[in-house]
Amino acid sequence: MALYITEECTYCGACEPECPTQAISAGDDIYIIDPNTCDECAGQSEQACVAVCPAECIVQG
Image 1: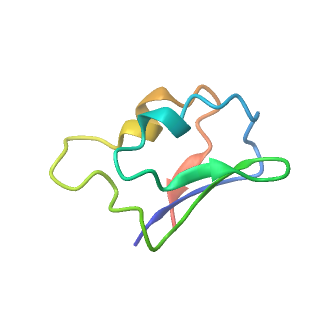
Image 2 (image 1 turned 135 degrees about the horizontal axis):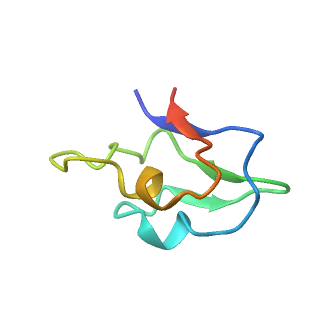
């Protein structure tokens, strides 16, 4: 199950460059995560995007 970004996103862009699979892109008002590309940072102790998100708006889908 992929991660997703909630409406609380402040559109800061901190998450996009951290994604190792390039699953995050800018939407109209918030960043979005492509569920077909997101592997939740498989093999890592935590998800890279979650670790850098100041709004804590990236959650399990």
